[in-house]
Amino acid sequence: MADAVVVTLMGEALAQALKETTLYLAVGSGLVAWDTASPLPQPAAGQLTLSNELARAVATSVYLDDTERTVGGPTRRIACSATFGVGVANGTLREMGLFAYGSGTLGSGKLIAVVNFAAIVKPSGGSDYSLARLMRLAFLAG
Image 1 (tube, rainbow, N blue to C red):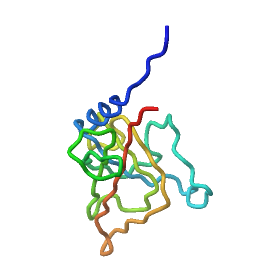
Image 2 (spheres, rainbow, N blue to C red):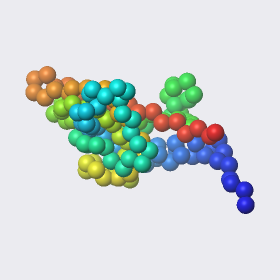
Image 3 (cartoon, rainbow, N blue to C red):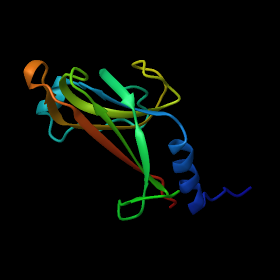
């Protein structure tokens, strides 16, 4: 029996299914050792959670065209964004994950995408600010 070929429209169907699901963007402190690692360690494909999740927020998603512009869609690309307000996600942030089938409870749901990045310090107190984060996903057929 021959293997099936995933067709181009599958990417569009996956993006549409995610866009119609409540998604949560989460940030975490990751590991302090990442600060001196060169290159920065990349997440593992089998990763199930963030290393140290600090906060999550409901993500807003939009369709993107192949040039990264927002369109009415559906397309094979989506961008998911969330804002962490004053008093939320304070500390050193080094990782971000996108969760489906979860809730606002830390650690809930299925991690479907994750990225590690150079440390960002979101201070508390009088220097605190809102932090907007964005993750782009592309479902491309090969």
